Image (tube, rainbow, N blue to C red):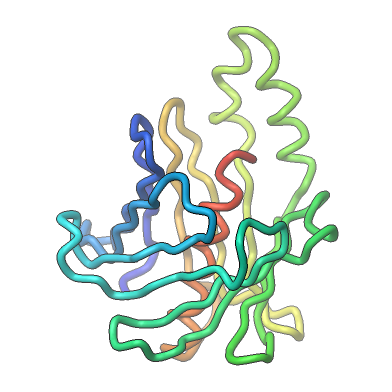
Length: 194
């Protein structure tokens, strides 16, 4: 993968759509989430036309605050999963990344005050339109020992939601797959928070 990656939410779409491109401008992943699904099921494609599925993400239960989202590739091979840490994520977003039943990686919001300030300023007429320039969350992916391996940061923008993903430390190919799929799922779940 050619880092940094740029992740963009399509702003005027009814159903959430994400495209991820590498630093050369090549499309790496494309996601279009289906609306009105009781049990989350997302397909990640290699192309915008959605003809080449790469990965599948499926929730282990119907709409739940702490559902686990399991990843498989196009051949049905299990890759891992991600799960929100329930009530512990109310203040600061926290997710555990699983490889089988063990969790060696996690995602954590760097500064929870950013979302508080964003929510407060968003309610102020006219000023609220510019919060996307000022309040930009940062999420860190760490190992169990605290070593940061990847960083996701919102890029200041007016109408679109753009993020940059930077590799900070070495990871295996499997860990990289797990982390990127987890970050996409986390952003789909957290998209209303900044």
